[in-house]
Length: 265
Ligand SMILES: *[C@@H]1O[C@H](CO)[C@@H](O)[C@H](O)[C@H]1NC(C)=O
Ligand SMILES: *[C@@H]1O[C@H](CO)[C@@H](O)[C@H](O)[C@H]1NC(C)=O
Ligand SMILES: *[C@@H]1O[C@H](CO)[C@@H](O)[C@H](O)[C@H]1NC(C)=O
Image 1 (cartoon, rainbow, N blue to C red):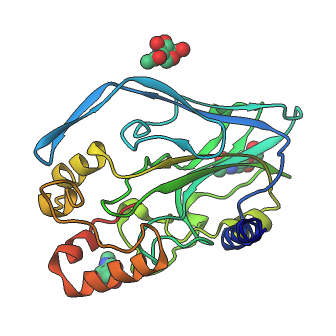
Image 2: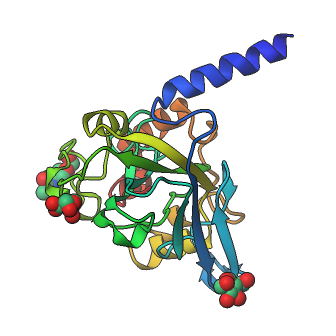
């Protein structure tokens, strides 16, 4: 009885925190697929290997690694739509450890495609191209949400029409992507959510390799949490106390200062 109550309360609180997450059955069968290559990432004094596999992000919370989903999806399929429907697809991450990059209500935008016709995603206008997951070390699991939205008319917006958000979020590669107001975007463009899939991933060898080799983060920070390196901060991943802890550490420790400048999703 208590646990049922607790579960219901938890579900209520969770669904309240991300008001843009749809509930119940949705009318359109929407899938996102990836073709992961076989790879080995040599970083942090070890080899991280990744096997080749095809992944279909069709149900809630499909586990993936960032390395497997680094490249564009190989397909995004839309089945069961009415002919003549136009769609928008967006992908967001609410789980970055920085409040000026994402919150539950205003996640980080990873992809935005509008004006999809003939139930064929390749017909759409790519407003913001796909950016693969790059969850920083010690930030826990990130859930990447894909929403299929039915339009009532064509959308003429461009990337320049998207809001510029906070001054702190001024990294070129995140332009127009921080604190994306999903609920407001949906209502102001009169969109209806008709399909929804999610995938869940955490830091992997690919992410650590890229932070060290392509983003100039120190090995100590990029490898944090692995045997032989400093442990992660102790607050539960993704908790608000962790966010506070990360911001405090940022001010107090130069290691975290570095991390701060290599923004992250
Ligand atoms: C992934 O799917 C493609 C196309 O169906 C196929 O050619 C390929 O062998 C599959 N790869 C794996 C690792 O199963
Ligand atoms: C969306 O479609 C309309 C009508 O075809 C077009 O005028 C508009 O430019 C399109 N928007 C984009 C971003 O391609
Ligand atoms: C970006 O934001 C940082 C932190 O607020 C600031 O120090 C820097 O001057 C800003 N850069 C630009 C180009 O606005």
